[in-house]
Image 1 (tube, rainbow, N blue to C red):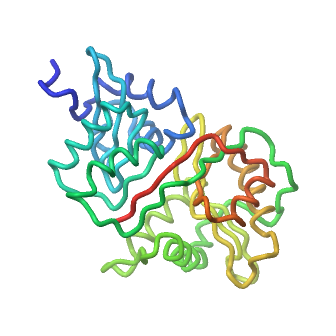
Image 2: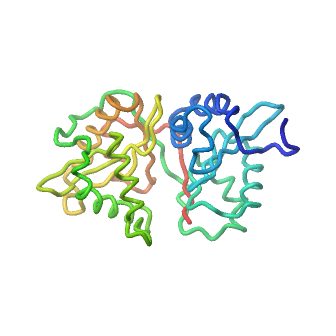
Image 3: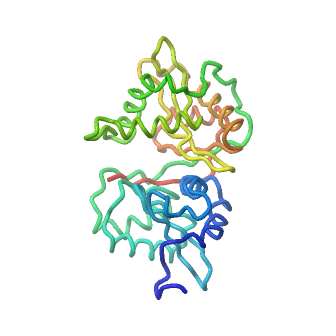
Length: 281
């Protein structure tokens, strides 16, 4: 029996309906879908957050992940209104609102007064994907990271995060939690590196993976080596490795003003399939 409102937190019996929505559009939904797929049967309680559902005429039509990020999925205008009302009542518990641009803009316009100000608003982020071989030769020095690479990979990852997000991921624990998350990615075969003389010169991770798609995050080139097209061959290698070992479609999103990155991705063969937005707190 549904609540008198149109929104409630999903429970285990809702997983098949939720996955039907998530997997119907696997590229934009990969972040949330990866968590639901990883949780397994009846595993919503193991999510590091809640998954909200919006029903119309007893049919689940939209989702919203509420964890470290607030992420709308297939959110209709009515669902955006309902999710914003629920989020406003709970108060801000996330570090970002991320997802399809129209839904994020709708949520933020309703939450700005109570949640604002944001540290940064990135409202135009092309969502790119590739579902075939890269158009350029992969860099043969790029490979999957191994456990022994973690000490070299950690400072590069911290530098990337700080440059991209604007704050350091190193907290009061001295970076132990961040290192743990990085280690998990390495063990899962979702971290890609080029290392020369013990120094990481290129890296990227598959931050989200489902049977249908993966999303690349954390792309970074050593600042001293930028302008040498390492990112082109490096991303071509990431595409080849990810499609071979993780998922048939590789995606990512990037700030519209990052012209060098957009040019590199397009050379590799990525094409725009949508628009994302991010509101950072």
